[in-house]
Length: 551
Image (cartoon, rainbow, N blue to C red; front, side, top):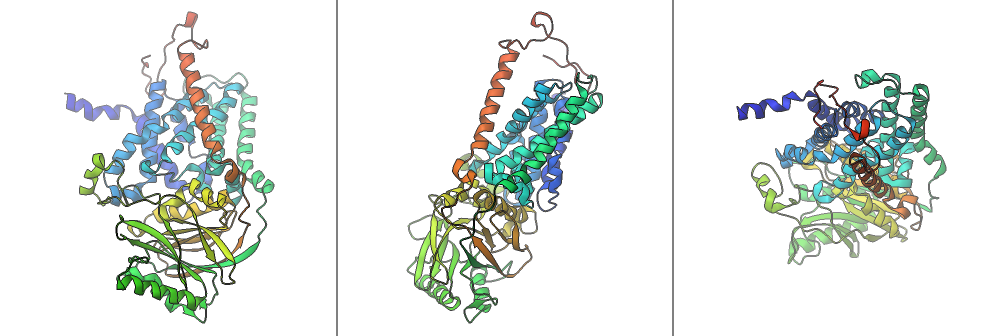
């Protein structure tokens, strides 16, 4: 009997399954590959309606949990080859992060809604949405992948908000628009939204306020775009990005071979570049090593740099003597090695397993990392030189690190004129993962006010200007060299986000904490929040099942 009850019980709550589906819908539609980014302005409304219909805070917590599980699983489906069934476990365990969002929606947007409650909802609900985005920003929990604001990567006019408050501010604008639409629906058809509820006392003013809020949210990006012109360009450089693609043999030297094949008379593919960038893991030897193979490879790359008249940024994936397994970005000139950056933010499960002692069993049922790689010490600049001999300070980051806005911001603060990413996504070739990864460069460009390029060994090679406009791209099935001319700002230029940091995120966390305290105080009667006579309770019924809700 107990076993049967355990099997049947979940199906007694169809609204929770609908919440799961409502959570999985937005990431499937608004991020690459579909990139139906306009849907992000209202894609959260179905889930919000389910939260509003919850008969109690406890039920809203449960629906928010299911919503979050669906969101995470759909967002990271392409990680299945790496972590296998662990993806379902991740969704089930971490889905709770969306419960504060669900509770805020239920408490503030459940009809009838007053104008003051709507005003509070415009502040509190987007703040609660930032909670899972904030928590997920921790590297060990997957990093800030597919933050809701990243869905607008194709729209520089919306990305202008990122120069003011980072990707977090773009997320806030999108969630505000969803809140406004939910209020408009609640003002015009409250009984359909939540059966048994009456129309608000000031129906037309509330609907008008909702329309105004929707217009303000949608117009905030273009307004920021108009008020924050790009930094003046101090010079232009040409960058050549080499993508050998998926090759059957000799993957380790495919970038070198392709560069050599396309190099003639100081040109690569007919263009004189100032910098040549290879993808992640483009060589498998240690350029600082002392073996014959190490020295021979370094001499070959030095000769290739001299032939093309440009420094080459390579990426070695090896275990240097006396060190652990590391990934290095190595800047090579005709004179030798000019600088090294060691990858700092490693891919969870792909390059290391968080809490390996507890989760090491995943290696037996998936392709999770058999051993942990060694991380570097943090972002720093490499001092390149263009073909005219002028200094070219570049912020170099590797693959997964493009998901972290703080790293590119550190490079900008140090004076980088260009942000360079090296990537390789062979494990996820053919999925939406590489396309989603490539889209992140647009966010980092808009946030820092600097051009961003990403050279892929396999995956997507892309380039964006300082406002996040895509200038060039080569897809997952591509093979060749992408050359792009870039207008560079002065190294001292800073966007407001560069100077102010993650103030939007931390403000959202503070507002969420304050709202939780107020809710707790009202439920305890400290702020006069009791209902009925002398604070007595009234019966509540679930809008979906019609069953009384236990207090």
